[in-house]
Image (cartoon, rainbow, N blue to C red; front, side, top):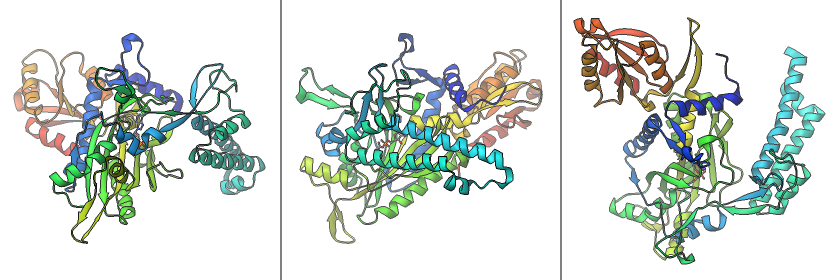
Length: 509
Ligand code: GAP
């Protein structure tokens, strides 16, 4: 099996996710619904394990963080106060020939990526020509064509950021026209004007269709936390600093929903709002940035998959922001955001609701609206990060091939699979005994169909860390063969040791 190229690797991962019951297109029998996906039998296990890993590390391991499960429907004033009604927009543009809709800023960013590609190509060519004498830094700062491209990138980027910050939609159109950016489908530059498009889905509450009954599906879980800040603080007698964590669905009518589960219209977030004394927020911002990076690294996914990005253009509620970016098959993209949200949200809810959302700080004898540091990670994106970094095509010593998912064991859908070598000679009964012994502790699967080799391959493909085989010797001396997923190493061990071996592999530090 040749090493998959970057382009077809992603397609293979999507096909694998379907074939092995991780992810299906929503309502597939009706030709699917764009940007909505269902998690199948193995997908739901992996997803639940990611949730549990996050929830435990946030709520169980931090004594000053508690959980919440707030409703998806919220009073419409919530979204006025949060700024989502007025500012949760994306600039969209339509191509009149293909009738395709794009985000204007993404069209420009794709154009910038093409210019960057030209720089990379020139650099590669020069590196080949000059061999060991090549000085990349010097080349990039002196070569006329490279200088032209990088100057262009800088100036377009600056114009785009300014236009986005000042809501200058005409300027975005100017950039698209001046750069002669064309539609990837029709190839034409026949564009409409750029318009703002609000990303919130709306629906009506009750039986009458009336604008007064209009409510929204939450575009982030965070607002459910903000409006409950005082309820939790008072009922839990929480002292600052403290956090509230929540996992739940969020909905955004994304203009361009693409790249599988990376950008969906219905997705799940795992968010935590950490309430702090004003003036201490930058320390906590750094603290949570480090904590969140640690959380990712503890899983054992290689460092090369992660990078940190400091925001230049800040969301309407933030005074500092980092993204933890992940190397997805289509490049580095945002996986998690860490924002210092100041007192923007609590102050806005205080103003719109007329209810005080202050904290009495008895140590300093003062009352104030707390500042907030937020960590927000997309559950589906984390799923894609785990799946795509785990997917490996391997050629084995005997020239056979396998696809294996090196999923961090703590997240794997099944922790072990139990196989009787054959369906005869009381081997299934013995295997069932082992299964019954393990299944209350770990999610395990019993399988007796097909050859052992095929059963190994099936479990490699869904990422099961251990396969346990019961054979005739088991009946004599209560030992089994245990095969480890990544090394494929097989050991003969007493049944009584199984539990501790599996447990050890699942421990995190
Ligand atoms: N409360 C802050 C907030 O919602 P965000 O950057 O808009 O910030 C946070 O979203 C995270 O939610 C992102 O880092 C991403 O992982 C995930 N996310 C956002 N939009 C998404 C979408 N359309 N599909 C899947 N995940 C999404």
